[in-house]
Length: 247
Image 1: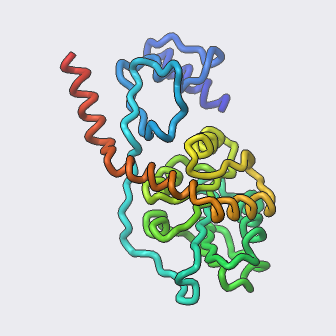
Image 2: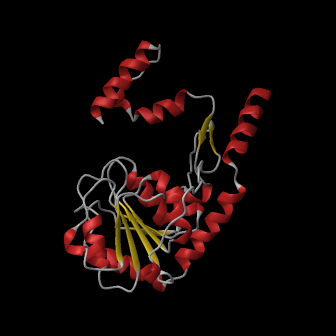
Image 3: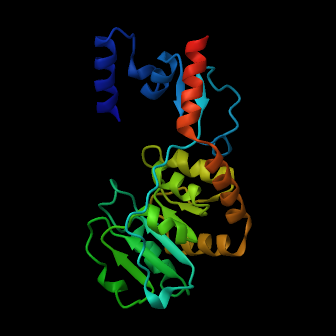
């Protein structure tokens, strides 16, 4: 992130702010400069902050979720637990990080595994398995309502969409903010954090079996789903802004 920090330092200083990236994360600096900072998240998904800045308000996740085409399942797979795997939309250049170990881990399980390749070619060694459905891309809003477990590299948007549909999550990601997202998944009880960007097939299989054998993960995910449904982030944002200007 060093080039981003240097760029941010130049821009902030040009705008009249006294900012030096060595003193802390530029995201913290942005929060400190705001009179009001609206965080798009759910309180139950966050840590129990002991010193949340007074200008921060947690307003609920902002998730746009419209399924236009529907999800076309294979007829032979209807009724089987659907496990959806995505390595993200940006850092997906190396399928050996998450997609390959997921296919290896679940090749012998009686599940329906849907893999979003995001531009990658189909993986020949797993094409013989009829329950492994490799697709060029998958629309999250269409597949998540049918999903039993979502395996992800920890992208914040995908995780929030999974929570909106009450889906337990397995996170395997450490870059950027993904380690923090995984920690929140673990802390909130909605899934399992593998704490690595390169999980083994065995660790993925154990995590899937643990979620399948322990209903507490789905129960907790459904609890957060209910809270997301009643937390209208746009309405909450408007109320906080109006209250700020009224004072």
